[in-house]
Length: 66
Image (cartoon, rainbow, N blue to C red; front, side, top):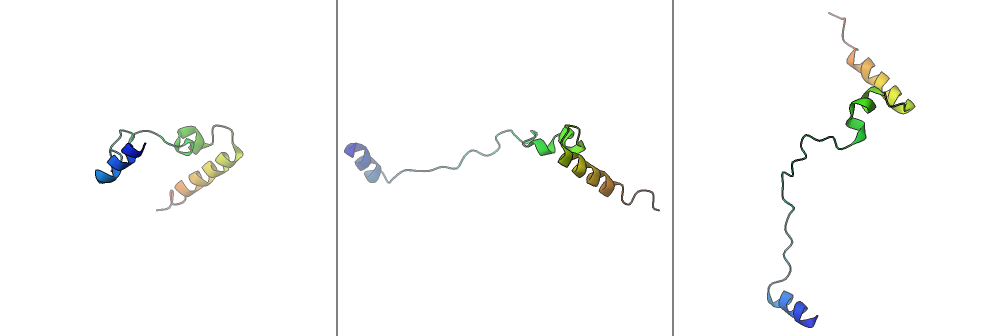
């Protein structure tokens, strides 16, 4: 064990590297909140249905005027 520690100290320490970028998850949905059923409130949650109602109201707010 002492040899291992001495090698680390003599070799300049431990090098920590960043994780590789671009792991291929760009197109994937990471949370349930971004899935279609949750956005439209179709999965049965009252909260999601209420949020879907507010989204449709906001989307239709300026339609029909003009």
